[in-house]
Image 1 (cartoon, rainbow, N blue to C red):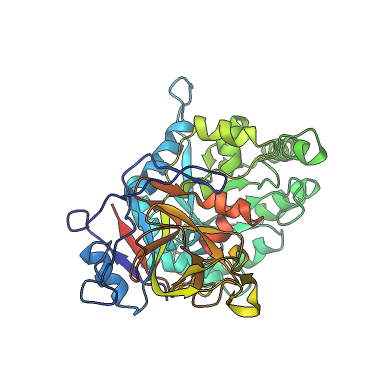
Image 2 (cartoon, one colour):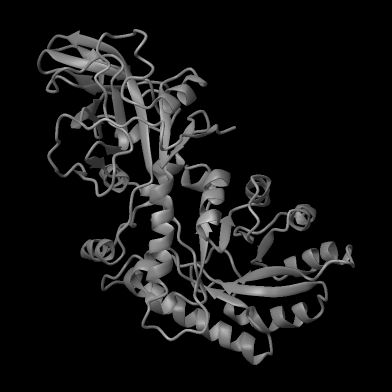
Length: 456
């Protein structure tokens, strides 16, 4: 189980980085807020100060519980800032709207690696209206954490899970008509409760989940037979909302919008109240206001990053319109230093061979923790505010970096795999682009053995 640890603002020590890294194509840039932590000197090697070097006492104590110096540091203030920024963005002051748009915070995938139940608790306190999970099991964990707000089970339910939906007050998404009868039978067993609310998913062109537009009449007929159910919302999901190029992919979202709204109007024509209408995922929230509906569903932008856009200028535009703060910094420490001669290989298969006498640092984190294996020979980390290249193959438990050009590096130094380091930021989305993947892939890759430390 993922360890959940909280660090108080008052007792947490923060040091300023002594070296400033230059912004370059690897994604290092100045941060806009306070540093979450910094690289530490850790001089003296493995001594009594090792555990505390570069981090606050609470962080060191929390990490010591797992016996390995690797942790994910999560800024609660950045998280709540992003939620507030999104809510204000989709509720512009000049819009004449009877009720504000709602925000459904996506906390599936263990909260994009941030710790789903803990993140949900933080966001509920900050005013999130709904939460989105992928399964009943995820929803139960969020409920057990004490969250009271509605929870939408986005990927629906498997036969036999109906009782847990009812027991834990989870709102299922229906994406096949036959699911109505299954839900209705389960809800009818408790004649003292109100009708079970569910949301309908319409497949507007992604061809993944949802009923087709030509099934609306059949859906309405079947719903009329289900006295123990109530339609609480209608939704769809976009396949390419970040694409604006002159191509079939660039035109797909507009086509999906048209198909969805035609289906929605047919539903209304049949006398069915759709309830809460919601379409917009992260890219649509930032760049397609016509899709905002009654509620928006922020995913990756909730955690501080805009998705990639086509063309790229659209991402830069979105970042200006809706500024966000990165929420997670994945950190570890140097546990060994090796001086190697030119011609020596490092790690499995000698994928890195030194072309000069080099200093190689070994980090206490590998792909078993969330250091993406694809970063081997391609990625960088932050050490003392400077970029150091990852060399060789990323192992399950350790990663090697070249620190030849960084002075004063010592065993115990804090290393940032991505996130903030003093005034510097190694942006997760830039790291992801460098290996051809998406931001959420890196964040979700942080494994359960890595403690999440929540700081202000």
